[in-house]
Image (tube, rainbow, N blue to C red; front, side, top):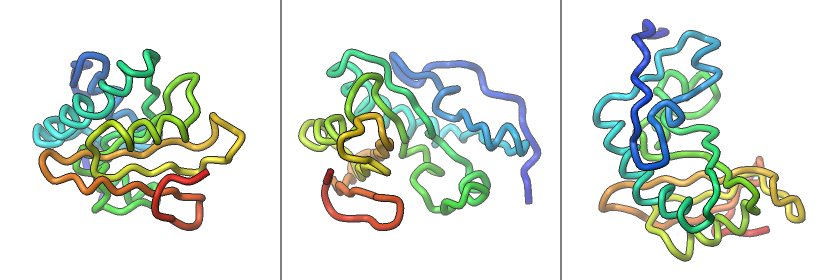
Length: 161
């Protein structure tokens, strides 16, 4: 059942360089009229994710981070073929790229330097630095530091080219 759309949230910041709007934007939600507004608890999780992963990464690479998917409501996740148990539904995960940087190199830097729950290099093609994207999640106080590579069909342990 589709939730009734609510008034959009203000364009407030969740951290120094990231807005709530870019963390919840979804073309699919807009096209289908799906309410993708997070709860205050989800916003708290998004703040932790931004402050502990995205901000340090942006500071290191000194270039913008392009968010392709942040928070997703459970209904939106199901509409795009994901699970309602996805960390995106909790405000704990984000998919992104760093402008001008090889996704594999960015993922390796995160793995070596930051606290995270799950880090997935998705759809990356060796020799094509702009291919694919990075998925990273963060949970306050209970991170697994699980690194994976997803080739579109299978997950493998660790980050691999």
